[in-house]
Image (cartoon, rainbow, N blue to C red):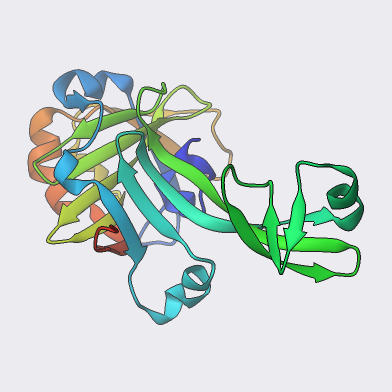
Length: 237
């Protein structure tokens, strides 16, 4: 599933504030991939389970059991999703049974705690939402450095949005690309860009095709903003 469906997609799509309060959007041209290192997965030393870091703004998300996992299948958010099944379904379908507050039949070879409310059993099931799923186009994973990777997501307009995953000392940071029109993080620092019409009547849309040098010396060091931070959990036995 594309990262665009996640809660933090609102900035990834490229809405930026100008100094005057105006906004614009941006996307990346596929041609930029020819200059960058396309990989199938991140380095295996980064595989593991990461927990959202402590912080007042994260309490609600942490209480939902949100984690980010990195493995050979890709990079994905894992959190609990509430679901329910009726008492009638449990009685009539031999696949399900409830014993001492545990529901069998939802997860293969395992049970999960449940609670009865009226005629419904409620329970939490783990759900995956992929930021990047290995081998599933048209999302591309690009390696910018030994610890930084970019996830380019194909959008409906035929161009790409981007998030950056930064691994460092047992932590993982999700970063957005943030531009202004002018200045040290201004779009004017990218030579190959064009303004397109038809995206919106309310703001301008730019299509970017940065060079390798512009990625290395401008975008990566000057235009990234941390959206979420995670800490790596100890490996379970």
